[in-house]
Length: 210
Ligand code: ADP
Ligand code: MG
Image (cartoon, rainbow, N blue to C red; front, side, top):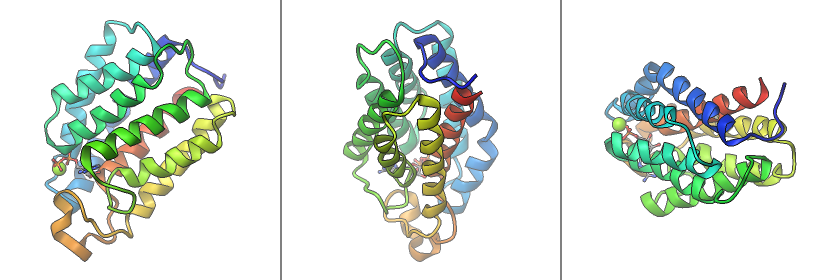
């Protein structure tokens, strides 16, 4: 049955599915980073998500903590740009949900907005720089638009926007991170972090809509 909102324990289960999907997609994420960077993105994300599974296995106290603990586990287990970036996404996003009993369409919109703001403040990148922001920013815009819908309908639209953003990143010229040195040579490949964002929202959709 598609879910119109999630309890804290369902948020935990959803995040474990997200972790498993990132772990399964390690080869694709590594390949994406080999095309533009140093090839370690998949392994870093995999390590981070293994730490997330361990952390969440102990149970979660709230919707806020389920997301925030995911971010803390990534930050403390991963090196590289993406540990700080993806850790900030979940931690700041989770904090925006303090006091919420359920995770619904409005919660999704608030999570992504606060997460994106944190990532932009932390790393200094903006839309169009060919980073994970190019999947996250369109997801944020779509999430605001569909915030009043039931969660299953909202996440379906948001996951599509994230995947479209990942695809759009292929045409961009990298101006941040390791891919910057490639200049126009970065055209034609999707950003690795944007690929991770698309995997994350697809997994959330699959859990919520199952
Ligand atoms: P590293 O670049 O240290 O090898 P990873 O390979 O794990 O780290 O992650 C690379 C990804 O991190 C990029 O594909 C990009 O999406 C993201 N990234 C790098 N720098 C930034 C930044 N300043 N803001 C947002 N995302 C960034
Ligand atoms: Mg890398």
